[in-house]
Image 1 (spheres, rainbow, N blue to C red):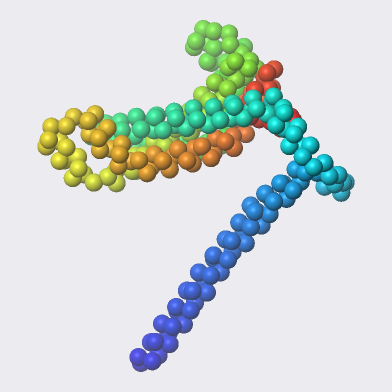
Image 2 (cartoon, rainbow, N blue to C red; image 1 turned 120 degrees about the vertical axis):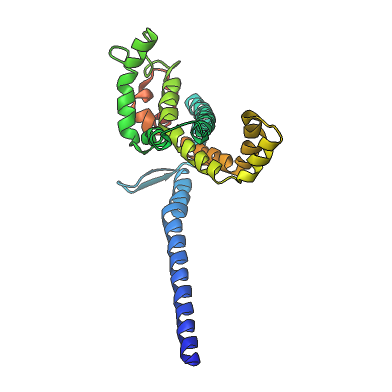
Length: 257
């Protein structure tokens, strides 16, 4: 019986190792085929004027790179992309901290309802959100101008287009930070808060001295994922038609180069 059990255990171990190797190899192949190879092809293609449909490949050397780095539109787009990513990430974290702290409070009732309410925009498709906000920003029938009693052309004026896209993005995405930070708060050791309360610390002091340092890895995770996401922002600009500003000042216009 012992030999038979050993044989079964050995067979099971070999099967687990084989399955693990298959999964790892599959992920590596997927990463190489869909990430590494396209990056290499795109980088090599930047030295050519190429049309894959007509099979035309004319070597240009560094001309494409010179054209990009000498373009004012490129640097304006880069500046606004960086500004957009930093501002949107900042407000996402700040709003997430404020609202998650409010939801964590023992005085608040119906927490599940509030969590659902805050997270609902996050799971709404960005295309739908962009089209809805496009009508909110409309200078003729838009709700925002009626509330502010103004006549601002939010999406077609280069001075306000970036602000409009920031408003749209922050409204949609802050719920993600709320849920992540709230989960982090519930996982913190309660003994620390009990000790702080015994020492006479106020709620604000506990939040600054305990919650913030303990949530640092969670906050860092949100900041990194937010920056990665916002540097790739495309749908809000295209969906809300902010790309049509006369100044061509948004990241989406980099495609016009």
